[in-house]
Length: 220
Image (cartoon, rainbow, N blue to C red; front, side, top):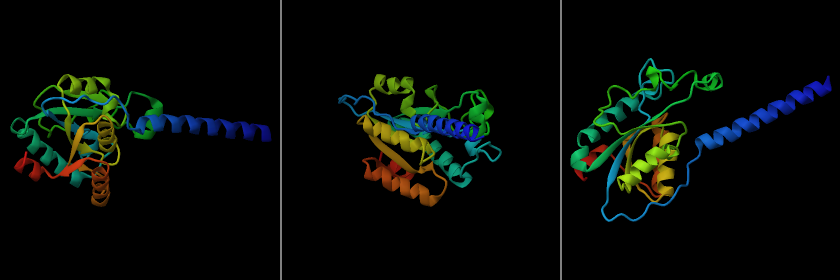
């Protein structure tokens, strides 16, 4: 009997270690190569994970509706003025591959090829610059990183969610590569205002600039 119990415990520990390793890879911010010094400053607006499962009231993983409504409005204002601001708009979404195990943890939210994984229809789409990621860090998609390099982007402006997860890892990954990073404070969402403010303070501390939508539009 004891041998069975010990065997089961060993299996549980092994499974937990494997899951921990997978999560650490899923949630880490990548290092990557440092970008070269381009002659002219070129900027991009990253619209991160503003997707129906997270931002609509009937979504499978509804987030902070009050904040997501706000960030959609502010992100659209920036997109509408992107040409004047000299911003190359890039849409980034998160998708989970179809898997029974993954569905246990995500409840089917953001599953690939489902309506909930689509960009919220309220977001203005002005081009086809759309990249899908499967980890928190947007730079985990090499096509996205190559697109930035091909367009000689060296400054990224960040909007979207979650301030404590995908936005956080993307900010850190961009700084790791020597990008200039500006976070739009009222165009990113967190689970509470307090959590958002804490992350904004952290972003400034590690080298990112933080501005409001209004400040960006007033002083491009």
